Amino acid sequence: MNKGISIQVIKRLPRYYRFLTELEANGTDKISSTKLASVMSLTASQIRQDLNCFGGFGQQGYGYSVKNLRAEIGRILGLENVRGTILLGAGNLGRAIATHLNFEQMGFKLTAIFEKDPKLVGAMLRGIRVMSDDEIDGYISKNHVDTAILALPKDAVEKLINKLYSLGIRNYWNFSHYDIARRYSDVVVENVHLSDSLMTLCYRINDKEQ
Image: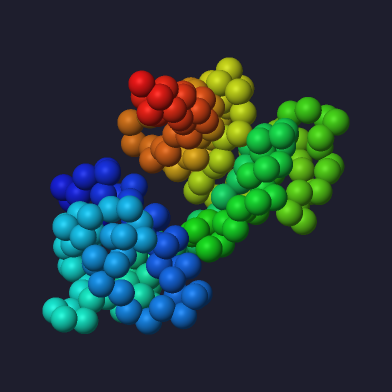
C-alpha cells in the first residue's frame, strides 16, 4: 500500500488511464510530459510529480511509453484484481449503472442485482436476472462478493447496511447520501453525490459570468 500519497493524486490516476487508453487506441507509442499535460489540461510539472509518487516511469529524452505507462497505472489502480460485486437498486439509476459501465475493465465483475420493488424483480439487466432483496443473504453466503454498489435512497441504505456489513462486505460505491464510514470505520467507500457535482457546475457557470 502506498502511504502518504494524497487523495488528489489518487483521483487523477483514472484520468491518466483514460487518456492513455485513448492515445494507445489512436496509435501513439510515446509521449512527453509536456504533450500529455497539453492533452489533459494539466502542467508537465504536475504530471511528473504525480507519477514520481509511484516511481516515475519516464526516460530522459524519450518521455513515456504510452503502452507501458497505461499498464503501470492499471497495475497501481489494481484493475487486474477483478472483485465480485453486487448492485442494490434496479431503478433508473441502477439500470443506467448496470447497462453502461464496463465493470471488468475497471477491476470489478457484476454478478448479481437486487431490488425491493416486486415490479422490477425478474427483469433482465446486463444478462443478469434481478433478484428480490430477500435473496441477498443466501446469495452472498454462496458466492464470493466483497463490493456493493448502492443505487438506493439514503433511508434504504440505512436499513440494509448492517446486513451487508455482517455478511462481510467492506467495499462500497455509494450513490446514496448515507454516511457508511461514520458507522463503520474499517470500510472502503467511494461516495458519489450527483447533486454536489451539479451544484459545482452551477457555481463555475456563475463564476464565469461574473
